[in-house]
Image (cartoon, each protein chain N blue to C red):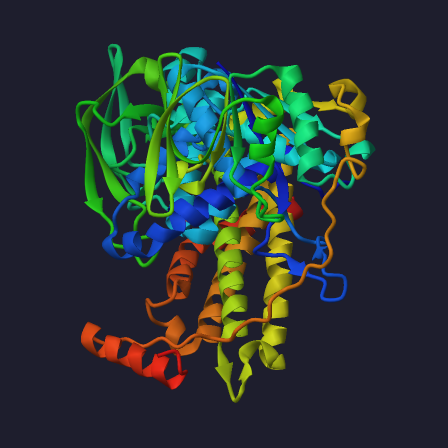
Length: 379
Length: 260
């Protein structure tokens, strides 16, 4: 057993940490308030080959591993949860399925520019009536000649409107239930594709979250990802990978909040001594520290399993469940430590608390993670 | 064009403390970083390579763990890296260090040598100029801008109250200040590729062929008598006043302390 990161992983952490401190953190408050998508940050990440970390160099990636990618999301999220999820949704949810299920032609056409960061990716599964129960897909795809014609809509799509390439699930045969779902590669300029409502959210406010609308949208049949009817499996496999990214995001948010709280406790004085001298708060911090460290082990283990070709579905579910709940607990208690100041926008801590909440919801709620874990345990 | 960049791995002085008894740096547990001015020197070399084409070799004298600083340089975009490492270099002052680096650089070949102005641990700013003297080539220190011109470089040297534009033929040695540029980050792809296709060469005293008499402690005339940390002065006083009142306030303070 070896808990040491590789030299490459250590350098990735160092690089992304420096990048996050200098390029990401200074924007975090402003883009949260204005809901402005940080396009310039995405361009900078592309310049440093951060947009395709676990993808082979022949497909435009950095030739790295999943654990390095998770570390990158973690370090970005320490500074800004929004920036963390932009990278996570792009890498896990769009690049991920293309890398796993794309044909050579599809990889050359779509994966290469995405992994280079010339294009941004997104993933559309959730619908108004197909949330946790993703099998209730209403969006349809009917093959007509050389094209599929898509009709329906997707909601709560991360990077919606900002992305160039979308992986979209749709029903090709309603009679077959989940076996009638297929996955498609949709370009933002395809006829009949448009962006609908832009959500006004509690947290990760600078991350674009929109509706995708398909009105007789024409998708060439060569843009079918995997085989017809295999879309549900592709989506589930994609989300298994995505959960590692979101768990890493939650880990980063928790670490960011814990660091900020520790710093504040050493500066802030009450009753003539710093907050760090009060045992009640020391113990609170110690408990949070243990949870953050346990989170890190779970997240890295899930990533390590994926890197080593081992099953990672349950590991990713455990990591995401624990990481997101830890992020919520750490940020909530960190606000408490900051007191009245923590409730204001003078400090980043209230933003971290708002950003943390979504990690318990998207890419499978905490309850879905428990379903995955229990199903494995009790099978 | 062959560019050699001399870098040094230093303790991050933001994190470092001094042993009050011995007067030496407490290095245990202090993270090591690439010396900041050296990073500016490296950035300039890599951007000259990007814009005009060049071969950038980065060198350092140090213990085996200094490889990390060289790896960082490779991940930023340097082509080659040489670690000069030998027990014989132990105890080197700036002169012995310069002799070591000069012997190394002669083996590599060069048109332009870049160094940082000074290292944050020793703060001497001597190694760059000493190397130029030993090599008997021109040097320009405190460089804040570099352009390539026919046959050489056009270089702007910073003064405290202005600057000086100079044209110089190669070979030349330049020392960089932080105003020269904004160093890039490591590139993630480079991080993974460099472990596949780039090695850090390790050269010892014998290999660089330097005169043993000028190396290490033996070649170091510098003797440190004592080093100490100045007592902190305590917090300054911050007042915010309109200019006129501020001036009056300053005058009253100076009178109070009998400066005027």
